[in-house]
Image 1: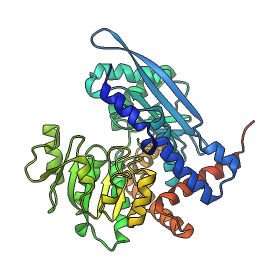
Image 2: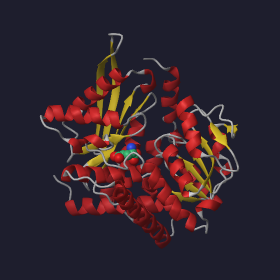
Image 3: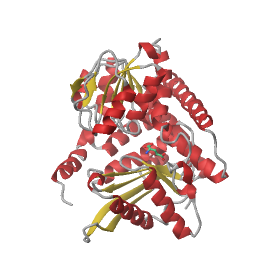
Length: 429
Ligand code: GLU
């Protein structure tokens, strides 16, 4: 399935500032150096434990076979089973999946859930594929990985362009091979199949909880806080809606194509139903239309990039005009941009904390599956809030104690935890 645009994006993603694995490594190196991490453990933690690449033959609806490239990178198991989503996208690269797998390790450690990190990806264009094709692709990918995943080994979850249905197919395929139902093999499942209430909203809700804490540092209340959100999917859309409900003034939001802006605040539920009905924000009447890049430069209290990597770079960082950057996406800011934002005094809620609500409720789902006992939604949300607030405060204390920015503090905190466990376990020879 030739796609010149996707090829171009894949090439672009591989270049210096925008290579996500290099961005992850640069932050890791800095944090490890300040932490005084021993050379031996530095070498172990800097690289993934395992990188799997599979070629997935799929019978297309037209009758011909197509072969897709898929990855699963398992970065670390020191603290428990590897954990992380699977994304389907035409421009996904192995370097990106490697970075995302490491970010999962650090993310789980920052919120202190007993998981390591992993990530998967399949190079495909899900928008052009039928449900049947997606199902066959997902099932065959699962079969290729069958020896490497499992409730005690590696537990996948949704990510970009995958959802509850994808997880149900993975769970079923794995269960058919095991000859019994194993619902704890994935999280983010439909609630009726062992999913957790509140999981779908968890990443957006986690963003809200960290923003609630961050605005206190600026003596702001939700009503006095203007918010710009990039993205209107599972993270951005739900995050914006929850912030709107809490009283925040959400002044701009975008989807994959473009954005809308109204300085007086947008009615987010209305915007989201417009988007659902029209598949685009274009034509929405109560707002001005802005481009996705322009949107990032709107003056606001909170900017929440909730779409994809490399949105804030050395090219636009000096035009960002927010007090708080809440990174709902994984890797939306490059290391070069970090420096610029730091000099401008922007308070960053780093991705590995801001978007950790998803994996936190994934942990709750895994626990519930293994107990066979399910919690009420308010219990899930309350436990999530406790985790996010405690982790936010721990991170701020760590940052003040070591006199480092919040991103460096997040990496330090995470590396310290993973290194401790690796040291205690020792290296098996
Ligand atoms: N894909 C989500 C993330 O990037 C969730 C991962 C999970 O729940 O395992 O954090």
